[in-house]
Amino acid sequence: MRRDLRQDLPALSGGTATDTATAAADLRASRRRLVTEGVGIAVSAAGFGFVYGLSAREAGFSPLEAIAMSVIVFAGAAQFAAVGYVAAGLAWPGVVLLTGLLNARHLLYSAALRPWLRDVPFPRRAVMAHLLTDEAFALTIGHFRRIDRTDEWGFWVAAIGTTFIPWNLATIAGVFLGGQIPDPARLGIDIIFPAAMVGLAVGLITGRRELVAAIVGACIAVIVALVTSPSIGIVSGGIIGPAIGLLVPARVAHETAPIGTTASAERYAMPGSALDPEVVDEAAGATDDPEAAR
Image 1 (cartoon, rainbow, N blue to C red):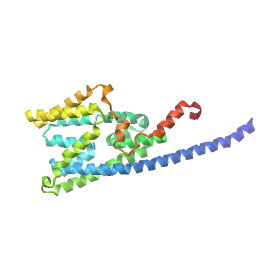
Image 2 (image 1 turned 90 degrees about the vertical axis):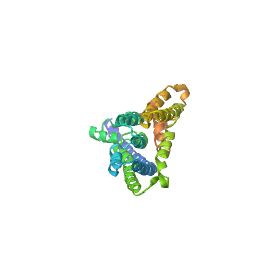
Image 3 (image 1 turned 45 degrees about the horizontal axis):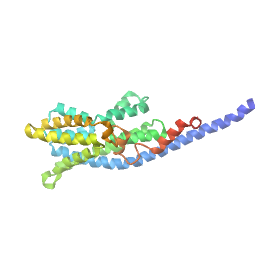
Image 4 (image 1 turned 180 degrees about the vertical axis):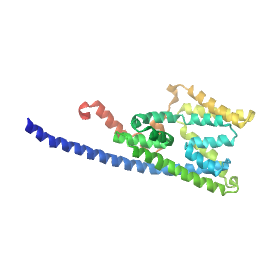
């Protein structure tokens, strides 16, 4: 029996080394995939950051205000919305309320990442929360699922390398380039902000609920703005529109990518980065086959 035990020990050790080498190879492969997918997102983030910088200058933001907003707020679509609200003269409570509603999906993103990041110290998790975006969530959750464990390096690359740095550098470029243009309207640059907002709004429509909310909100905002003021119209449309949209029954909503899900986040990433079918299939197979899982 002792002889058999001694003969088994080397094989057991060899298996452990093989598993470790396989895990390391999988980690490297997943990291390479994350970086590759992040390149496309970085280009997109830079483009939108540049447009934001131009829009902020057009709305009357100083260079310091526009740049500080990208660093401190760092909220993409919410920054575009905030620029429009400020330009319309909306009071700060309204700006906070409406941008908060726009970013409510991040509660679901953070809840989905919590099981993976529970062992990360609180100070680092607080920084992660600040840097969390649709794109960072999509890349990170896909990376974690592929390797079936947490990899902080992957999150920092997804959050900082592919979004935070490109967005802020492009914001700086847009701010200072916009400041050099004497008459933006003459070059048609004044259309950049509304065009960007329309594009972002269309991208958020994934079913009848969002469609109803967008149409009702826009109609109410225009009507109330004509009767009272633009700021009141913005608040009215921003609150009543989504409320009416929520009244659409789920059975007829036909949502293809509900806000806050990985399917929603995947629309902001390279195809397949948020939800890897191979990882899901492997996980399902391991659950169904106890011997394979063992």
